[in-house]
Image (cartoon, rainbow, N blue to C red; front, side, top):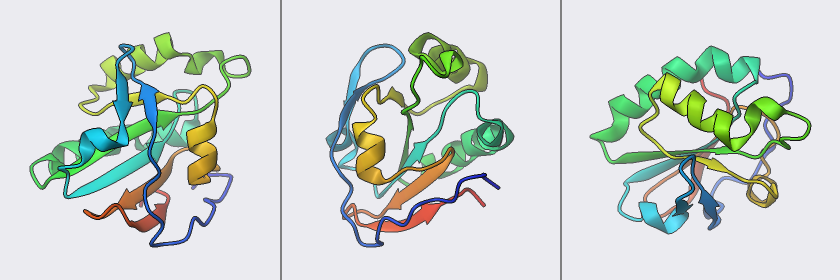
Length: 140
C-alpha cells in the first residue's frame, strides 16, 4: 500500500534501545516493555494517507492483543518543519482523537528511525519475547 517499500532490516536483528518523549513529554524507553511477550514498533505520522487508512485498524489491533502480552509503540520521526501537522502538539491531538492506548513517541533527530531503517509510514517491526525481529513491513 505504501508508496515507499519497507527496507529490509534482517530478521533476527535485536531491537535497538531508545529513549524518546511521548505526547505528554514523558520519556519512554524500550526497556519499559521488558515484560511484554512481543513488541510491535510502528513508525508512523499524522498526515500520511496510508496511516490514516490503517489507524483505526491499528487501534483495534492494539486492543485485541493487549491481553495476549503484546505491547505496541508508535514513533513519529518526521521533520516538523517540512510536515507541521506532525509536530508534537498535533501528535497529542491525533492520539486523543483516535483513542491511542499505546505510547506515541517523537524521534526529533530521526536517529531511532535510521537505526531501524524505517523508510515509510506506517512501517511495522515485530519483535518476539527475546526482542529478535520476526517481521518487518506493512500492516496487512
